[in-house]
Amino acid sequence: NFAGDTLAPTGVTVLANNNAVYVSAYDQSAYNPGGTTSSNANPGWIFGYAVGSNGALTPAAGSPFKAGVKPVAVASDPTNRFVYATDFASNQLIGYTIQSGSVLAFLINGPFSAGSEPNALTIDPRGKYIYVSNGLSNSVTAFTIDLATGTPSSIVNTTGSQTNNTDTDPVSVVVDAALGRFVYTANYLGNSISGFRANPDTGALTQTQATPYPSGLKPAVVATVPHGNHSIQSVTP
Image 1 (tube, rainbow, N blue to C red):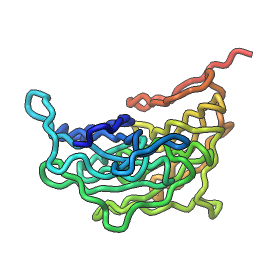
Image 2 (image 1 turned 135 degrees about the horizontal axis):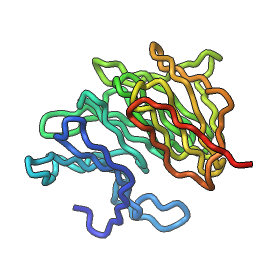
Image 3 (image 1 turned 30 degrees about the vertical axis):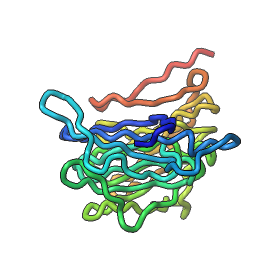
Image 4 (image 1 turned 135 degrees about the vertical axis):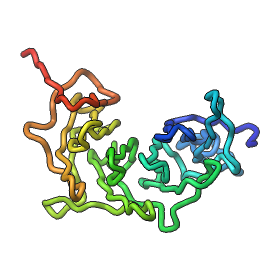
């Protein structure tokens, strides 16, 4: 419905019950640093779709939904009640409640401050904590989720800081799928993986031993194996 706009999809998430799909995208004709921009377009969007019994997608009423300036990642919680997106350009985390028909509504007290250029996020298997990787500030921001309202609040770690340092340019973040006890980032310019241990009661992070771990050149994504085994790294001198 925005003729002439150039939309760039950046992320996708599927609800755990497979009832809806959400896609983050931004309008390059409205957000184009150093170039020309249109004056009548909204830069950031979340497109919502209901999933039919045959897998076909139907746009949700009111879709797309506004999502800041440049949303680059989107995730849904395991209870199918909330959706979150990172706004790369505004250094924020945006939250939504999922209403009937896959419609999204802003959390009333958001958006929420993250680090510089947040580019990825993950939610732990219990739906209690959110972890956001910040590419420019080389850090992970940890949030605890209010289970009643979905509101995220920043977690202060044991050093009294909200900053969890990674190697250079983390571009992907994941919580281990089995226990939700460990958090990892892929550091694109650091050529490494950073590891953290997550406190199961508070969500606070502490660095794992000997982190960061060398990887191949410019790792762009990180994943974990869901059966609970720890990965084994082999480094050839």
